[in-house]
Amino acid sequence: MAGILQGLSYFIRTFGCQMNENDSERIAGLLEAEGASKADLIERSDLVIVNTCAVRAKAEEKLYSFLGRLAKQTRGRDTLVGVVGCVAQVQKAALWEKKRLVHFILGPGHYDLIPEIVRDKRRERILVTSQSRLWREWPAGRVLHSNPWSAFITIMEGCDNFCSYCVVPFARGREKFRPGRMILDEIRELARRGVREVQLLGQNVNSYRDPETGGTFPGLLEAVAALDGIEWIRFLTSHPRTFATDLALTMARNRKVCRQLHLPVQSGSDAVLERMQRGYGRREYLDKVRILRDLMPEISLSADIIVGFPGETEAEFEDTLRLLEEVRFANIFSFRYSPRPFAAAAREPDGVPLDVKRQRLVAVQSLQKAVQIDTHRSFLGRTLTVLCQGRSKKGAGSFAGRSEGNQVVNFSSEAEPEGPFVRVRVTSCGPYSLRGERSGPDPAGPIST
Ligand code: SAH
Ligand code: SF4
Image (cartoon, rainbow, N blue to C red; front, side, top):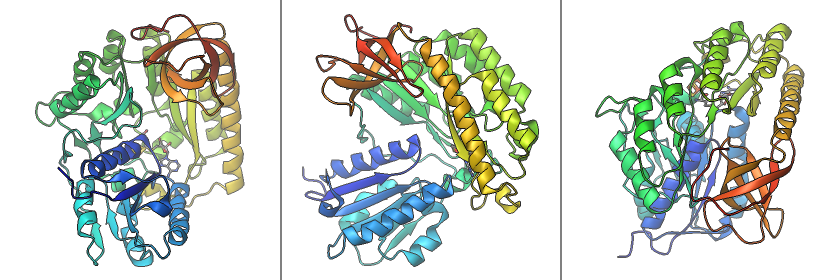
């Protein structure tokens, strides 16, 4: 049966986090279910969708420069342009007034409208940004996952935490939870199609409550771990305030849950954490790290760090450096503080000059780089189980994947790996990746690293 978008070609540009990537995979799935196909070039597409990120000013600027280029690329063509996602939500008025090129603007949660908007292609422009407190399910089974063996699954959306620097609760709205049976149905279907790793997504997965049964996140993890075919389970993001011992125990009990956790600390200073309204202090964070490492000594931890939060003194910043030395994260994502619309901290004078923020970011990144080189050296000579992600850019016979600890592993192999998991002997390393060669027979499933 021909869909309503038969013959249409589309192009999606995605900025931002894994949830945006997952939303784009869903949008692509909806369009293809109606007969549309992916265009390799903007110049050849009938429809261009930009899925946007508002978390820092820089991410937002990327949208505006993309739209600037797009105006030139689509000149003289009848291309339909849509802006969706977090910037669409928080900057709707500016986009509506200043970007006439944009035909439709949709906030998160309204993407199921896209096929009909595109089909109708009416002259009037469309804007939908209402927010709800209830989960809105997508049409079933229509997600175009980019990796055949690994998939993102959104389990909740939105945030009630209102950290003082953050725009997310305004962009994604308040917390909404997806019923567990829908999550499990989707994962069961993915497993049937060969997916072996799932990454459960939400702004704060710890606060998950099944809207139908009242079930908690640890309960959901157990249920996912019980599904045949699923071998590796990851989840993101866990807020340190609500990361409780029962979740650590559930992880430790279930060997399918990867020994890896993203636990964004943001700062090592109690005073800054207080001003950020994070709801935990340095000691509490370190206690949680200790519990995790007691239960799972090999666990690989990562975090987000913000430098130059309003009023951050040199001593407060030093506390962050000391925390990084103490915890020795496997990986961090570090950012300069960026004032955001609606966020409480944006009403304070920023106070930290740009060059100081820059220096602090360099200091954080070089300390972390040294920690990573050191940690990676300890992997030399070890053989790890790696989930393949495909060919790497380094030429013929080079492939890339990730270890259970979520480290990037580049490896050489004469033949293209057939299965999702391979064994790789680590022969060299850099600060951001491990390198090695394929070793021995491929495992049927993952083996502990
Ligand atoms: N829900 C997640 C984070 C989502 S935003 C959590 O609470 O951990 C991802 C990261 O962007 C945050 O962890 C934070 O480090 C960074 N970030 C958010 N707002 C920011 C801002 N205004 N300036 C700089 N970095 C910011
Ligand atoms: Fe933003 Fe804080 Fe919510 Fe994370 S927990 S999305 S940082 S408000």
